Length: 488
Image (cartoon, rainbow, N blue to C red; front, side):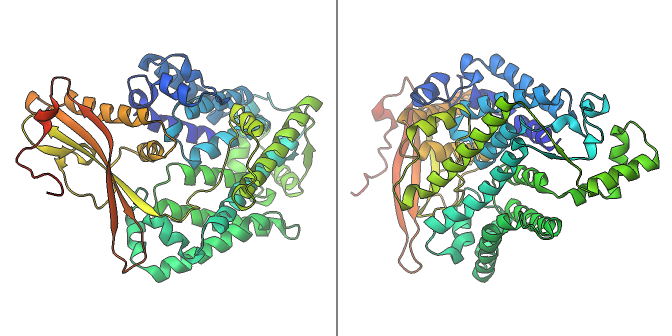
């Protein structure tokens, strides 16, 4: 249910940028993306055609599969189909993905090996899933369940290990995260002005992420430890969502934690109204027996085929090794073998849980300086306001555009994507403004502020990130002769 809901929300957000990000008319043409991914094993159904209509059709198919998954209708097929569609969207826009996207697609991968439709679903209500007595009140044990639980464990353990590797001053962890101007919300801005509080919250965060994942598997009073640990992580994710913009990551992480809720949580009478929908009989004795069976931890050992079990086991060992090698990459110079990277790309299991792990050496802001026919200079990234030296990040329609700008800013990104983005801004503005406000020259400027210790001054650098000139405009026509040359 949670996975289907998250998929629908994700699709609704992406659909607003269907043409701009997923069609050939936008900032990521298929030919350019495929050329950039040449040599990898990434794949995507969205590469088949770049028209907005075809991309929209695939979005509709993805939405229908997500709805089927939400209600548990032919759940296994819906899960496999949703994974294929999400993997295709993920690869189609490589510069607009975040940790939440990676987590969701990996959770869907493991979910393909889980009996999601065995309880609280249309499949269960119709009796399709009743292959074992009292299955809906049994604890399921399989390599699939082991795989997804260990994956969640690895996500949060690796996150803190990366921070321990890359951060020299862990007590400044939260403050360094909040310095990233691209992500801050109002609460985050407020916290920046309270260094003692951010220091305390940094230590609490480190302690929780370092100890919490291990507490989930304590053999003594397991239910108690799990409930308190999950409650602590729920509060942590609520805090993250209040302070910084991370897309759907916090909500996806909360859905992941539900996988680790102990049997005792589901056995309370609160869930009886839902049980009534799916039990063959609704009398009170049945409900009482169902609750008792759940409390007793009646374990149903699911026995899939030997082939499926072997595949899941190999995938689990692969994921564990991939994460371990990723952690060793900096300390010992041992990189992940190319063959492993290719397999991870084909299965869309490539992962590196280093969110906010590195100390932030600089802030980067962008200005889309447009010189108009009427002589005005405006900033297209700030609602057409007059050009000024930026003091904060520009407004972006949503989190994906923030990630996109960060992506094309990376040193390894081909310059063509920066030119395409500048052209996109140029065309979008001209299509919605009159003749006097058409753009003669657009310069996409990048301002970088090096973060230095307090009292050492501020260091700025500026460079041209992309440039577009109107076809009928000469170079000399864009020079402002009444402005002195720089340095004169």
